Image (cartoon, rainbow, N blue to C red; front, top):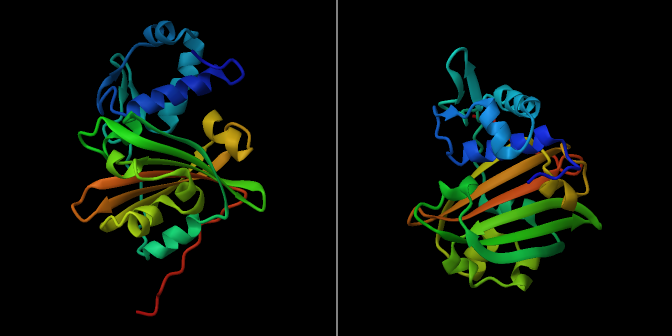
Length: 239
């Protein structure tokens, strides 16, 4: 099940993190005992303990003496700084003249983005790698409603960010974009195209694009190399 080239505790932590963020088990739910997890994933109890320790440090789970381990009731709670800006600034930071389309297909809606897409069962999925002066700059995953994803070809993907394609090429009436930026450690999937080591720091930009009917039409997950991208802002404090 796991790649023996990577630490087993790390891979197990990634698996459990994905399940928790996908709602299995639900917030407040009990995590199976260590022995059961070890048997289920074919690893040692020591490996399970290492993985659970990481999730506990991230406050995704909590241990209660004599009762077991539980998913934190509010595992996503974070302090946020909300910034207002134009859609053009979002498009500009995603533009690149060197974009390689790695994958384009329809997939079942993954648990990580299921909350955005309501009752959708399938989603159009796109993977791209952008370079700056020949060097990997960001790795982009887009999850787009099939009614729009089916109209997008590789030439468009290689030229424009998804937001611009939806608004200016397909003519989708958009309302707003919700944006979050956070630091993460690179998984094997992200590290390989970006040319960094597994567990290296990366910046994850997540943008959910809403249409005027308040539907999410696209979710972009853009991973930036931390050594080639800086997040800056300009605040007006004159008033």
